[in-house]
Image (cartoon, rainbow, N blue to C red; front, side):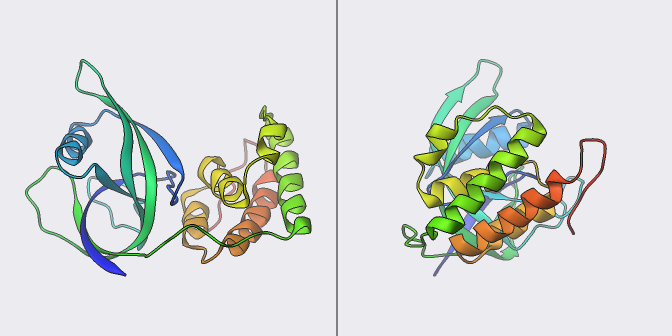
Length: 204
């Protein structure tokens, strides 16, 4: 593991995983400054969830470092960017800085391509639960395209886009293996699928 200084974008409900992509619309001045700074240096931004509200809420311990793979600068100073996940990181400490955006010192995981693979029955169970959840929520999904995804892209893709609460999303990010993340996704799909949109179902 290596220690790095990382400029961060705290955003509840937004997960980034290694080798996955996350599109973001950047409009707040401090995060426009963050993108401008990243583009002038190494194109890297750390995504992490805050533990609450306010200008500088506490942070969860685990986030994911991303590289700006695509950027569109709009005339009014806003940006549309796509982050590509590099590796998860663990926050060691927050730094005292004069920049409008927050910076941390973090330990970066050495995370190569995943060699985890789901057994056929595990993959089938995940796809079945995802289909049931999508039907309950009224989502239109191209299941033929889904079936062609490898296990990592399927599991992390669901984790990124599923409408779970921040605590559930964080648990998915912190899962130590694809198998553990897949099992947790199935539990969460079942839990949140039992509640309609009027219920405030949360997992703490």
